[in-house]
Image (cartoon, rainbow, N blue to C red):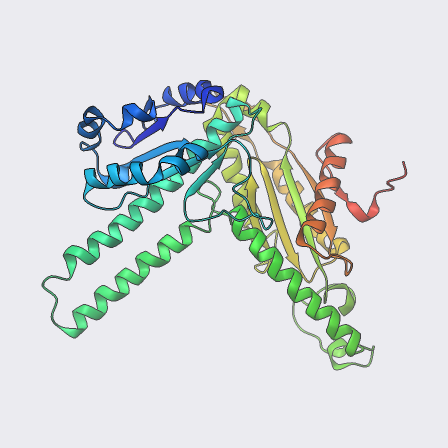
Length: 379
């Protein structure tokens, strides 16, 4: 990655200089820390011309970008003879999020909390930068392909083949925008979109139940088939369950064994969450931040969702991780679950219940499964 360069404009980011200095010590990419005025100099121009357009990212505080966007964009576009868009906008408050949790505009955004911990922010920022570089490289490959590969193509069959290859590149780019770089699960934005779709589908199922009664004599009840669900049909239709999962003591793992091994733990867990021997192919798993994950189980109440949850806990219990100095350790997770209620108006309501169950599990000693609906909140 040493051919990649991240230029950080330090104006307005005094509280985060320690984070950037820690980042600069890592052997991932070159980092230059400079003031905004220093960026617009001939010295910076000569330095940037040594790097390809897709290998450069300019990171700066959000308010500074807004005030100087035209100046900065024109300056960088002149260097590369094309419009420069590889910006990383650093927000000190989460005002770049809409009420639906989606980013405004097309810029890459990263949230720096006012009281952030450098140790936890650094790996997330590194992974995010990898994602930006990957997406930028795919985009440049597509543009270069269009620019140079069609010059000698005149035959219809060759043109069709090249068109298919471009469509495949577009699909790869679309895929990278939906998938978490490390775990290969859905990212936060995508999994929340699926949650909203599932909520709408379930509401339609409730309406059908209210307008069509299912009896014991119904053909739906009498039909027998392989791998049929357990229980009654009403245990599965017009319902779904959300499972929130958090890795116990993950900061301790990073501190004791290093962030690279911490990343391996998250990657291994991601593989389990996508394992069809634990969950169904219709279940949806995503990483929503750090060591926290979410799984949506369509047409499943919490009683039936406990079955794959227990399978998952048993699989995790058996995994051994080995550090670079041959120390063996295991990990545990805490799980909070809640099922959809017809009273839910917003998608955040079921998330909040599952999250409360998760924190209840952690407060009760971790390494356990807690169902929100089973908790006696009067205790």
